[in-house]
Amino acid sequence: MKSLGLTVFGGLLALALGVTFLLASVQRSEASTCLADPSKYPTAGVNGYQGDQLANAAAIIGAAQQLSLGREAQIIGIMTAMGESSLKNITYGDWETSGNTNPDGTRTSSIGLFQQQDWWGSVEDRLDPTKAATLFFGRLTAVAGWQDMEPSHAIWRVQINSDKDHYAKYETDATAVVDALTGTCAAGSGEWIVPARGTVTGVFGDSRGDHAHMGTDLADGTCAGPIWAASAGVVTSTGYNSSGGGYIWIEHADGITTGYFHMKTSDILVTKGQAVKAGEQIGRAGNEGNSYGCHLHFEVKVNGDYVNPRTFMEAAGVSLPD
Image 1 (cartoon, rainbow, N blue to C red):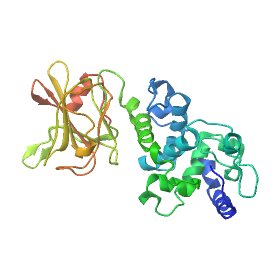
Image 2: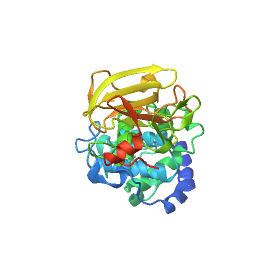
Image 3: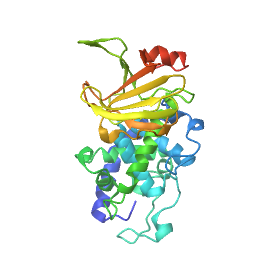
Image 4: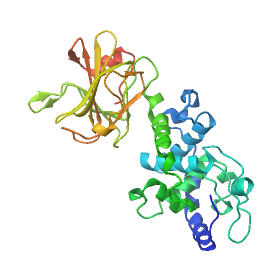
């Protein structure tokens, strides 16, 4: 954190006392995703972040989840740590690197992922990624209307540095890290994988008025979650129609094609003719077309005929989540 004015100092000190209670109930994340298994983090890293940086990001995401904070807050937490410490749990800060002092002339005491000064908490808490993140989220959620602000501006209200747009440049990378650590390895890591987060909310063959439901729906209750290619293949078409919204079709080996529906056009991340790997993000879940809420409608065809995605995936060694 950058140097603070005396008035801000007093306000933050009072606020710190108000969020200390959160730490007592915080435990390390044991989420059944990549967060819980560092051995499954992408070996090539995510947008240049890897190893311990991803482990620290996982702790931040886990802290947000334990406070029932969703993807938006998780991205904000990662953006902050990227902007403050490059996701490294460092034991030094502004004084050591830049000679910065507080307005009263004292040395800054910034440490950890969020560069928190000593009024945030003990050295042990500030150097514990989960506890440091919990302190940060406690202050973030105390900012009135933070969800409606530009993410960097919401962060600035907590960090109080000199540039409220400082963190904006980290949003793309933070989003990629959150999406990578909250779903990909949980979805599977073989030839075929579950193509989205969440559980099955609509099954193949259901009656939908004048037609049968020709796919399986997956949803986790949020919008803009990642959609991954269920297996390696080539994108044969993308587009938009009134019933399916934004869609992608991928051709795989052995006469198999898969379809992905209900995206915004702007959330289709691949183009016709593009080769993709299993688990590569191809889009973001949406609520476009004939849809009842943000979700992925997933279809499978074999030699041109629709098949039940659940039974197909089970035969491929992957179970869709109930």
